[in-house]
Image (cartoon, rainbow, N blue to C red; front, side, top):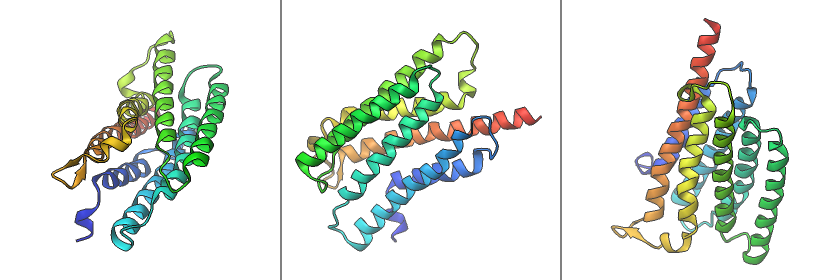
Length: 222
């Protein structure tokens, strides 16, 4: 009975996590891809724990503490990963400056609203940063002179998923308080439905990137 009520977002996150274990090769030229496995492990742990505690054990538990803490892991991992895949000389310095900006936004919102209130302004800011970094990736990619088969490029699919998801959800989060009040058939919030749809798109793109890594590894060994 509990299983049938598991949120769709948790299911797709588990599928992506399992896919990362199955498809990301153990030996790669760029081993930072392997870091996606523990990161996704943290994602599914947080989401599954949130579901079990919030829906099964304690219905009225405030989960904002958990998600506010996860914001730091989410932003740090993505900034680090983008610094690895964006082909620009000064990308690490840029990501470091962005880290300082995110930390400042995080602390300011925490001080003003408290940790029991979801820091959605910081969430929105981070999402905007992810969109910016995705655009920078594509600009830098298209400026390169050598040929790239984008449909076989793992980084392309990873960034495409990020751009689609964060480009949409950042706009949604800007109207967080309004959208969360809108219910479909009086039960499910409109924001929740939209987030789930774009979660599916992003994680599907990530799984495609894992398959590209696996296929490239097989081709290299052949």
